[in-house]
Amino acid sequence: MAEQGHGPRWLVVGVVAVAVAGAAVGAATFLRTNAPLAKQDPAVTRSHELISFVGSHLDGDPQLNLALLKQAHQLAETDELFEMLSRWSSAGARAEWRGHSGEIWHAAFSPDGLRAVTASADQTARIWDVATGKPLATLSGHTGKVNGAAFSPDGTRIVTSGDDKTARIWDASTNQLLVTLSGHTDQVNGAAFSPDGRRVITASDDKTARTWDASTGKTLVTFSVHSDKVNGAAFSPDGTRAITAGDDESARIWDASTGNLLFTLEHYNTVTSAAFSPDGTHAVTTCTDKTARLWDASTGKALVTLAGHTGEVYGAAFSPDGTRVVTASHDWTAFTWDVRT
Image 1 (cartoon, one colour):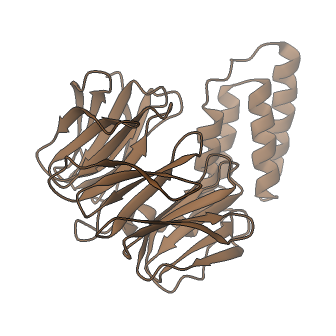
Image 2 (cartoon, rainbow, N blue to C red):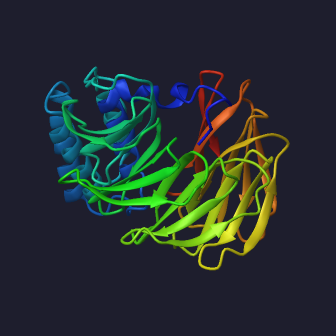
């Protein structure tokens, strides 16, 4: 996550106003999993029937249509399915999320795609019904701008990070504050749960990242090799490693249990974000030098530089099968890239 002062993060996350279109992107993410290809003709036939129904009800209930497309995918993965997903996502069904009184800095879906959480400069995070745009809850407690928010893997909790030097864990059903993660000495730029939901990792302007016990709020590990602000942090898919992105022109891969530094991934300017591939074998980093880079996460070796943006690059993510990367830039574009080429 880019820290305040490096560029307008709202360029990336301001698309929250088209939440259901975002749900369609989430659907694409779901549908592109490593499910088997079409198996039998009866399955293909049934899949076709579901797709045809969605095609004739594009303006209908978006959650129903999404559920039907998911079911169609479980039956058979076909070109027709992805063509219908594209039609559905551009059919005009939208829900605007209105209620924040300040800039929105971050947005994330719940694991089931039915809810979303937003983080705002108005010192709150909010939970929304994705299909209708109805606000479900306001998470109040931070005493400064809320920089990030994310659901736990099981969707039962939310972690937020703020300018008040804390991260906070909330019950996503009752909206009650469960734990305050206190220990950073400067603003916390982002936070994320481990894959098993038992830990949280945070990134801070105090030049450190930390992991915490998500139940007790106890600091477990402090990653303190960066020589400047840490803009983002994430766990590997198996939870054994962590990756951080820093103002010191580097990303770093760590042993998540011991805090030992494993690899330094060097750029030529501020590294704004970093993430592992779904299988944990690769990493992608984004930079204000207008590039993203792919790395071998086992050796720290640079593999490919993704060059083409004309502005600073603020975020990147792998597709579920790990064959593509999407990047978002200050140049008002998002690119998708073939990881292999």
